[in-house]
Length: 309
Ligand SMILES: [Zn+2]
Image (cartoon, rainbow, N blue to C red):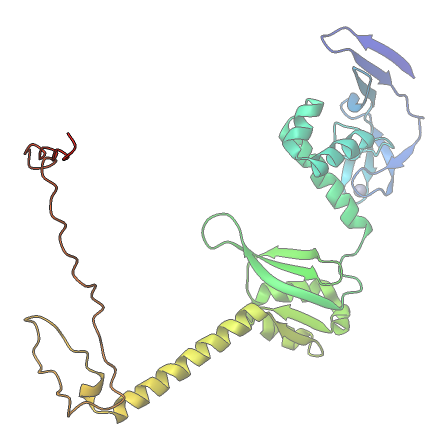
């Protein structure tokens, strides 16, 4: 291992790492042991955590191994993830800043581009998802769709009610999309006890087929909406029946002006329950007399002299 200081505007410390010469190595993609292939493109560098005001880089030969599954692939190194120009410690720090703040702020802080920060987040997310199974131990889930971008583009999202987190998402909103979730769930679908949805048939139909033991719970927003619509239909039906039983002139609104074509019903024809339309008119206000001398241009009247003067 050697240390070299390169004189630039920002000091750069390059740490040369020499790996042990072995006949075998680990594939960078799958991590399986594979035979040595060649030295690849030669020396590679990975940016490491800064040392004070200096940028630190690890420099080593990026060897390749001959993986049975992936063929010639860059061998895994213990300090970095596959296909990355940064060390794992540096990526962990940048992703932490991106989570606490945002990606652009993290990119500005470490002097890298936004796309590099985004790729770090993707690599860490894939690594984390490979360690855990989000579909394990599900009892109550929620299925719904969410719209993204412009046009009719939807994602089907499944959440775990106990953790409140998204556990599965896929493009589209159809029976086939929900079926893909149950395909990934496998036999664990029998453990589902509650499935909440918005009453869409493309969800409830598949749930009834793949998880018949689960109870489908509908959200209160749609239930109240459906009840309000049903009450509105009943109200309209009753109003329609009541109007048909009454004489037609009873529900006729009296018209005013010269456009009246039908005579208004007399007091003897009116039913006691006939609605009366009483115009709400304000009493006419009397016009205030104009004060002389302000608008008419007349001179104001002379003051009346008092008796004492
Ligand atoms: Zn491999």
